[in-house]
Length: 249
Image 1: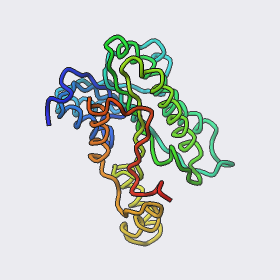
Image 2: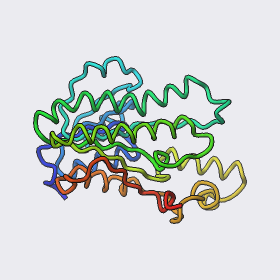
Image 3: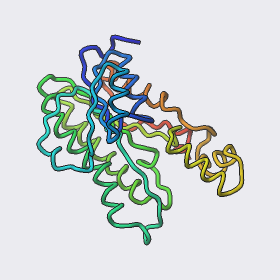
Image 4: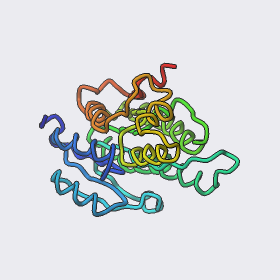
């Protein structure tokens, strides 16, 4: 699969595991030089070594350094995220603010840092890992849903501003993806309810999805790699659902 992105440099946040790692691998397989940015420095170093790329150990919640950071990447994948679940009246204000910081402010700051390089070279790709929760809501996820909706709007503004400079910006909107985090949730719920993990999947987590399985990280990565390619040069300001039919309802 090599060659399509040869000569391009990509930065993937939250790149050491899950969706981020799959995207990093996919971009590297297509010839991009990949920077794996993650809070887990050991995991970032290991994956970067496997890919012949670079590791950037970074706590993105420390946003002040990002305000003056120059980024020389051609492809920016805003993937880092966290999730906290609680009713609005019990949601800790600091938890709400933290989620906005990591999933709205950080993509803004990194995009702001990367655009001058992209504009100078007349080519760039901003790929935002949104969610079906960027276009739909679920109870008890006020902070996450708010952040993903905000990311959708920011992505569209980036698309409009970037268009004259050869820069595209798009969102990917998966349903539940098979990551370690989700698999732990499934196991915990199965134990709590005294049912099988398959029942938890179908009756609890995948209720809204017409296709009753998790999205694989490699499926998300394949879409990210296409969005990064020259074939997607006319695709911008879009949101690509990969939600098994959830948003068709």
